[in-house]
Every structure is written in structure tokens, then in C-alpha cells.
Image (cartoon, rainbow, N blue to C red; front, side):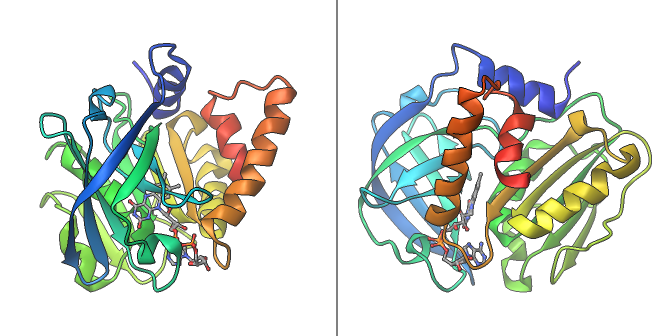
Length: 258
Ligand SMILES: Cc1cc2nc3c(=O)[nH]c(=O)nc-3n(C[C@H](O)[C@H](O)[C@H](O)COP(=O)(O)OP(=O)(O)OC[C@H]3O[C@@H](n4cnc5c(N)ncnc54)[C@H](O)[C@@H]3O)c2cc1C
């Protein structure tokens, strides 16, 4: 019996779980909705990535100095292919990058379906739409799912939803999200300041147990990924030097949430 936070901790601390690094080529770019482009990457080295979890993330080295983090939307081990869906938010290296060869490092696990909980709550914006789509593909019809997703109408078809699930589409993430009764596993991802606020709301008074909670700052308003990543790397080294367990999701979360 494992909660999401315990499962992520166990995986990150597992000595068998070594980061993989691969050189990949872009074999296809296709527009899959108004604001998303699917990039298919192929590599003979993807064999190192043998046991994917839904919504795993990878780091793409777009230039020698800059990388961006994206979700593995599809993985085809036999074809040696990974597909990522890139959100075009108007500006940014990730949206304008047109290269053909890229280094990939992974993986960063983001989701685990705990069998201990009564239901699942998802709060996410467009940056996490590929993650939500991958997670939803991994859930069952019988799972109790509540989701509030801040995604433009023209991109919503990228997510497959079961009829019994309560999925609400909104323009922006709510400050007071619905919290289902019972033991709930909550998964939150999106802009840093709104996810940080939601963290406070969901953990307040034990509405959601910390063990059942996963939050991710997927982007920062007004800051590039490189700016915010540099700040968290400095903090990572400081905490590591203080002897903190850098495989503990709670310690890792403090890099962006404190
Ligand atoms: C674990 C993880 C998984 C992720 N998976 C995906 C994914 O599958 N697909 C995806 O598209 N993104 C994903 N992201 C988010 C993505 O890494 C960031 O949005 C990143 O900043 C994009 O880089 P960029 O070069 O486009 O913009 P940057 O150069 O980083 O930023 C340029 C400007 O755009 C703004 N900006 C950045 N991202 C967004 C956004 N999403 N919406 C509105 N404004 C934005 C910034 O505030 C800045 O002002 C993920 C992030 C994480 C941490």
C-alpha cells in the first residue's frame, strides 16, 4: 500500500533508477490542436527508458546553454520513439525551437496511482495538459475523478475523458477548488504562484494529506524556464550540502514552493 509521495520517493531513491541520456532526432512535427504541436523524437538509445510511468517528464537540451522540460505524451519502446506535446503560449525558446537533433535526459516521475485513496483530484493548466492526457489514459472507468482544467476550448479534445468522471473546463484555475469527500489523491500543476496558493488551500486543515499530494510548478509568470531553473539549482546544492535527502519529494518540492 503506497501513497503517491511514498511511491515517488521510493522510485527516486531506487539505485536501479538511473537517469537516462540519449541523443535523439526529430522525425515528425505535427499540429495536434490549435495551440499544441506534437514533436516525435527517435533514438536508438531510448532502450534505457524501459519502464515509463504516466506523465514522466524529460529534459530537452535545445541549445548548449538552455533546456526545457516536457512530458512524455507517448512512448513506443519498439520504435524507439518519444512524443511530446508543446504548448504554443506565444513566446519562448520551446515554442520557436526548430532544431532536428536534441539531447534528452530523464526521467522525472510525476504521477503514481495510489490504490489507497477513494478518489483523484486534478487541477492543471495548459502546460500540464499533456501530463493530464497521459495520466487520464492510465486511469480506469471505475476511478472516481474530479478535475478542474484551465485549458482553451480548442485544445480540450487532446484529453480522453470517461463519462463517469467530473471534469470541469475553466478559463483559469480556481482559488477555491472542489475537494471531494473521503481520502483524495490531489495532483496540481501549472503556473508557479497559482499552484503554490492551491497547495496552501488543499493542505489546510488536512483536507488532503501531504502523502496524497503532488504539486508541480510547470512555469513562472514573467520568467523564462532558464531563470527559474537557475534559482532552484542553487537551492538544490545548498540543501544537498546541508545533508537533506534529495530524493524526498517534499524536499524537492521546497525548491519551488517555499
Ligand atoms: C515536469 C514538467 C513537465 C512539463 N511538460 C510540458 C509539456 O508537456 N508541454 C508544454 O508545453 N510544457 C510543459 N511544461 C512547461 C514548460 O517547461 C514551460 O512552460 C517552459 O517555460 C516553456 O519554455 P518556453 O521556452 O516556451 O518559454 P520560456 O522561455 O520558459 O518563457 C518565456 C515567457 O513565456 C512565459 N511562459 C512560459 N510557459 C508558459 C505557459 N505554459 N503558458 C503561458 N506563458 C508561459 C514565461 O512566463 C515567460 O514570460 C512542463 C514543465 C514541467 C516542470
